[in-house]
Length: 294
Image (cartoon, rainbow, N blue to C red; front, side):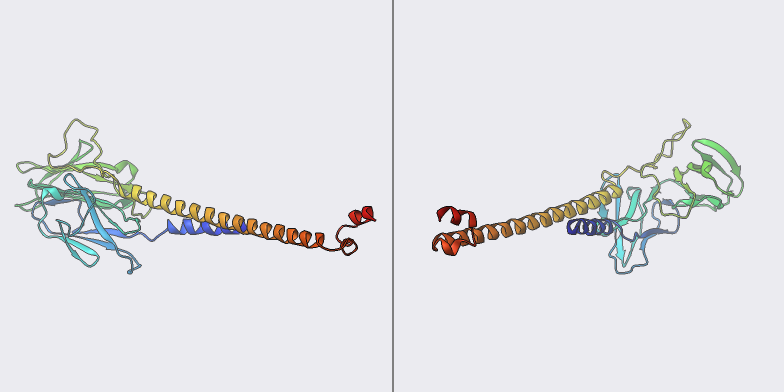
C-alpha cells in the first residue's frame, strides 16, 4: 500500500514537471514580412514575470542562437533588431532553461521593394483579416494583385484586401504583386478554431501552382525544433522519477533484509545459550527433546 502511494506521488511530480506556463511571443510591428533595414521588436509575454525567458531563432545560417549572440539587442523580456537583413529571416521563439517554449513565428526579410503585411500569429475562425501590399519607396495605395497558393484571388486598387469571416479553407500561402514594382515573398496564414498560440509551420508549404515563391522567401526548418526539446525535457523528468522509484524500492528491500538478519541472529544466540544449560532448564524451549532424554 505504501509503495503504491509513493508511486502515485512520484507520478504526479513527473506530470507537474512537464506542465509549465508558456510565454507568448509578440512582434511589433505586427507583420510576418519586413524590408531590409526595418526595425522590429520581439517580446516574450507571460503572467508570471519571474520566469526568465530567452529569445532564440533558427535561420539558414545559424541554429538556436539567442538574442545578443551576434544578432539583436536584449531589452528586458524583449529583443530589438534595429536594421534587419535577409539573413534575419527564420523561425523565432521564447524558451527557458527548463525547456518549455512559446509559440513560434516565421519572419521573412526581403531585399526587394514589395512586402505583404499579413497576420504573424494564427487568426481565429470567423474574424476579418486584412492583407496589405506595401512598396518600400512609394505610397502603399497602388493597385495590387493578391494570390493564394499561387492562384490569383483578385486585384485591389487600394493595395489592401480584406477576407471577411475567415474559415479553414482560407488557410494557405499568400503573396501579392504590384505592377512595375515587383512581387512580395510568400507567407503562410493559419486559421484556428479558437484563440491559441499554436505555432505556424516552421517551413513554408509549397504552393499548389507552378508559380514560384519570391526569391528571398527562404525559411529553413529547425534542425532540432523547440517542441522536440520540450518532449526530451519531459522524458528526462520521467527518467528521474523512475530512478527515484527504483531507489525507494531498493531501500525498502535493504531494510527488510536487515530486519530478517537481525531476527535470525537473535534466534541463533538464544539457541546457543539454551544448549549450554542443563536439560531441565531447557524443557520450556524444546519439550519433545527433553522428554526423550528423560
